Image (cartoon, rainbow, N blue to C red; front, side, top):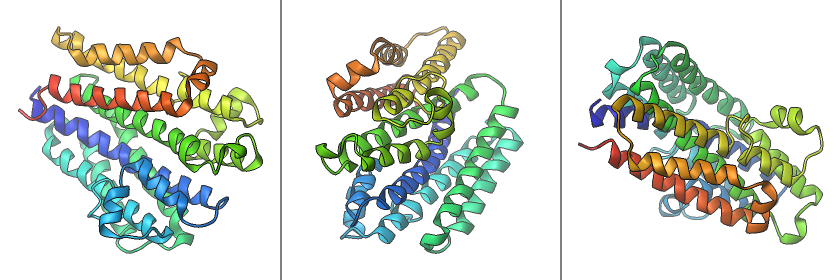
Length: 311
């Protein structure tokens, strides 16, 4: 496969996942805002999404409605939901011949519907439904991909883009909760702490799965274990890295070549398998997540280099 095609597939699916994940971060900020006063949490949420500097340059002082609009629909923000879906569609056009008709039509429909929903500033009362509709549209692309795409290198690059972005997002959502949004160390284990942890579960659509695994008792240790180590949870770090390693392995088999990115993925998977949650908390959850985020960034850069994305 040409590096340019691999690049288009990888970024098409990274952008779709980013759009969905940004919508989840917006929902997280809105829910956590109900337990906090002021606009501090929106600065933290934008910092987590990596868009705080851009916001400061374009909008200045933080206000809830401005932060939501920046993350949701501002075209000056390349990571906004609207910009991400537009980028996914543009990449899909570049690799149109590699996609099935169903995948292309679902991607195009997601763009058209999102453009319609985000044509103007979204009122706060309409925000939950708007975010829900956007996630439904990105889910339709994912469903068309699973249901119609041949399991070959095209599919592998699509999956690698998806799970790299998803792992990065789950790590960032955990970090924003534990390190930034918690008011103080004295709030650990308090009612407000537990409400915020439950909000994190909802933000990654994990409430139902968590209760099946752990029951109705919500606590930081079990939630962190579920979102970091549980291989059954499709947004956990362990699940995402496992899928990354699998699809990179399929590429290694197809091309009969093992590359540095495969070794990085193997080491990252081993790190997630070797430590239990008590060791992670003893090490420091924030510090642990930062090492995972650094490895995810290293892996993404190495994949681009190994498969000559820009050649």
